[in-house]
Image (tube, rainbow, N blue to C red; front, side, top):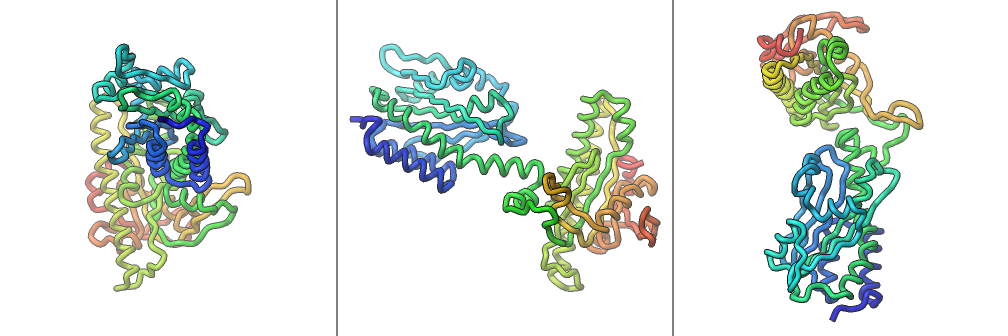
Length: 425
């Protein structure tokens, strides 16, 4: 017989959930143990799914599925799934639209209530009872949508016992729902925070910021390959295209350049208007002496960035082909790369910081990018990059750079010379 909702066993399970919340255990581990412990105190749970909205550039929601005797499942739902038929015909959608927080359906017996496709599917698998509980979540940090916060934490409990859940079973699940919601929210909050930090700051910077490096002036000097790219004719595009069309063009350009840098191990530090600032850090122990391990690591970084530049040009050629076929304007851009010491840390004011790179190397690479247009090539780099990736670069001679006293020898990406018109004027 199922124990009453006010039994000591239920009390202890609620306390256990609070302890899990305070200790910040992983969400999937807490959920699995919660289901197992419910069975241990006599509840006939055979299947349970918990779903919550998330802040992620690719996914709108995440879910965990527990089935008795089977491995846990974790799934993420892309943003476009919010318009899917599965979502529109789900109990969760109906509960949200009607402000319902508790829904019970008998799946077997004389009069089963199978008014949603999911319930018919569960009945077909031999389940007998279905209970859905929704706990709205809100908070200043993540309150971006009324629907999102109202959806909150959605939990479905399913039984395969012939008689289904008893009234006492339902009482227990209702009582423990808020305890579990606290534990789940505490476990999920760091995931959301990390998603936001990685999306807007990048993994390296996000990790440092979340570790507490948020003081003005804090940072470190490091050696890195700095990548800077800029869209051509952006002023003309902004003046002649509709806003939506200009935004579409910008995103196509960013997808070619920024994705190539990320895929090759770089990190995007900032989108500066229509420019992309990225770095490929060189490990601290690198010393760049002939024959040293540091030189090998520098070569790997330079080769990765060189491959990324080739990848950006190839992607632009493909994307522009599609845009041209659709009668949309094509785009061009320039890329510059430089290797040197940079200051990597917080700049700004005490109440508003930006984590970025500063230094001569950064200033120089921005000036070099402007030379791609003058020299008629898509990609330019300094000798430091060319020497670290031998055979991939052709010298274009020394050229004066605005703000620098001495001319700088520039090198063009060999494969880009014949393709200069694809990406640069």
